[in-house]
Length: 190
Image (tube, rainbow, N blue to C red; front, top):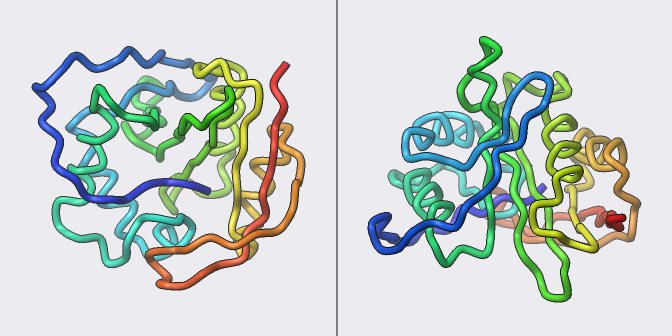
């Protein structure tokens, strides 16, 4: 799983934000983040288990971190597109988690995702990743993703969505303050 958590000031009034598509699934929509998402993002990511499943979300979550994350996601010069998993049209939470794509060189993108702990084992992550892969909004030829080796649930999401195991690696986890063994996955796009 990949999700950024760096702090940084971004003025939302500076420039028009590039359009991100809204992607519909059976139980929710993937939509661009909005400032009102910051509270639920802070709520979910303040859970140590969620933070430790990512590379860059700190634990404890510093004040203002979720607002900064949303501001970066709305920035006109962003390299990462972040979608809210929004189930409000189907009587679910307005924000169940997030899924993201980070642009890389050579028509490649890196996929990341997390869902709130209360929504684990519901299929929401798989449904969100499947929808994002099918839409392929970056027009990527190849998608990459990784999962911490102590998080087999995220690895299952990736393999269920057609990602193929590429190899072992390590990534730094801010919440764990340590290098953590990962599995790296690849998905060739048609």
